[in-house]
Length: 445
Image (cartoon, rainbow, N blue to C red):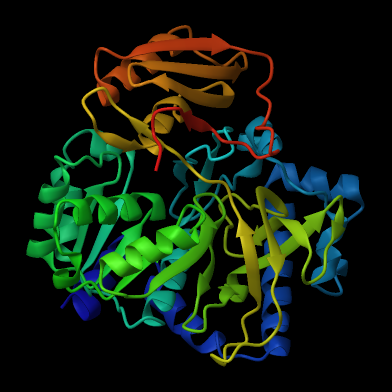
């Protein structure tokens, strides 16, 4: 019912061609490299012509670079366009959107994994293509539309009780959401009970949270093996070997499958059964760039992406801030999709509340990221009841911004928490060169 009637009807009501795109991707994943390159070139050219005609930002950008999409010869011509930074997106948000986009634009923002929250917009085409890619890659692991899936996930909605409409939608589509924002020894039996009642075929969420749940369940003698979970899909963070072992072992030596993407970048890559991270070539042009040059296989490079189906607000040569390597061509799974490896995306941390709850860092990041004018931030938990928030802000920062942060943190962590908001000129990275946007001196493995 869900697979053939309810979910297709759901997508049709929202004006999304998700299942048509899914059929296309199912066929295209087996194409040869030559076929995929031709498809990418045609989609890229159409996107660039659209961006030139319908978005003032790209019309000016192309003109300044002496670039004309009509004269494109191949995908490599894309390199004539400057890379796109988060700072540029913030400064040019209105000029980057397609005002006449069919179906309108849908507002999103990032979790601020770089300490730089970002607002942006998607259209229905982009939403549908990302959903289709996720559906296809779930099928690689025997999970189809409608199979029960449990999400250990987070969003601002979980701070309150879910609204009835979303709750009904989850039930109709065989999905269950459990907040990843609070994991504690007291909460684990309740989560375990939800697993028992729902009997999910797959689990989807942050590896740090799922591994923490598996560890705490083991400490309490709760047997995750008997829950019937067949696969865990890890996303949004780097999946470390010790987390993979804890999750797989906890649930009975099941596969733990990694994917790479971001809210603004979309569903970029996913592991096949051979363990290779395949790029969603029909939907992207992915570059690996270091010091302005494209690096070869085996070299670290920043992931620079162009989403070929993001017409409402094109992301053309977007700098993700994440580092990875281009993988070797070919895979024993038989797919023609390119590969990537050694993904070094940013990682999150946990915080611990005075009453002993372990909260995913995103629980408090959501408070900061939704306030206008925040250019950069870093959250430091010095003790269970002592939190410092470093902020770099611009003129759009509201006069009550500090109070909103204080109230939001207290709502999530407890009223006894002391919140110090400090406005600074710059926030340096860690000694390692990496940026940790939440650092807790309390939360430790």
